[in-house]
Length: 418
Length: 84
Image (cartoon, rainbow over all chains, first blue to last red):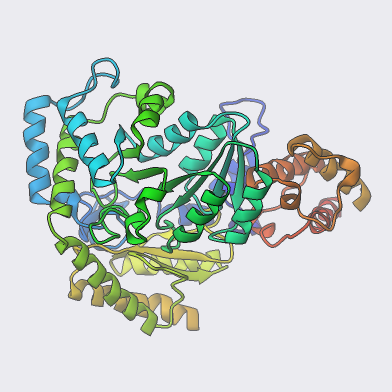
């Protein structure tokens, strides 16, 4: 183990043979204390001491504050600290207090929740909507509420953990089709004939930034009479002529059965939402535990989110700026001959390859130079495609992107050539 | 331990973790995916087999494995290493 520490990952310690449940596996303990692993782990869970703007400050281990160019936060449209959003949240805080103090079916439903859910359903062109306190809870709760033992959940192999965990909890059989591979999807639909089937996929894939092949997925699902579920966590408020997401981008909103979104990314707050036909949303209220057994979302957060929806959709200013920044940064990265995978969105991976050592070495150097980009290691991504991931924001200025490109050139582009 | 014995442990765990499969019909040239396993089923088969064989192969070394035969070869390599 000591010599091969970097060959191991969190994927290797899931099963615990320790006789005491409250003791982690012994090999995990020696692995996590290995100097190379401790050095790698120092990148994770760093503390921000400012809002997650593109220019932010983090806390160093010695307690000092360090200015960074932040290209990691999901604050795509800069709404988490937008003045109108903050004002709306402040006013709601004064009026409603901090928490909802109850589950939605009992005392936790406020006029704010009902109004925001109505506006989200209207925005997504669906009949109704359920609001969740977390994005993970929304996906997990939808899977758990919609599917039962004997059903089949077919999902893209790169779907988020929340969909996988929800599928596990539901008892449905889970089949994973090769990423965006329509032959693989068709083979699984063929195998599942005669069963109740849900096909789940993402609008924008979070680690690769590519889009679902929605026209083909919808065609196949229709042929096999399977229901469809799109996770638009990384596409809502950004894709489509009106920002409604990748389904709008392809002009296929009415063909997708369930539209899921998060409220923590482009919206700048926290939470999740599930939109669909009114009857199934009403049914979910009885069977989706993260909804009916959780306290309702915090009222000031909901008020801020409602304002964020209004700001992002009143015109295309924020989206236009996001896509201009994305184009500028992508061109700069491609000029450096970096591998950006198949990115088609504001999520831009810089793929380093199979070397975990190089990934961590680059991470240390770019962070020392003041660029806050996090290493993404196996098993979050394939072992031969370890990477950094840029989340483009409207808050990026040209100067800031040029500085970041210089650091990336000096450390990553040069490091990969040497 | 021989490769045949390792293969027997793998087959036993495939039968235990994947629905509707008969151990006698498992072809080592095929992948578990061919028998309807999803990635979580495969993790379960690999983990239970490694526990029984008392070996620990990093997952990062298993990503290029395409069939049951190659999995048995990889396990054999580690069984030999541990006994050396």
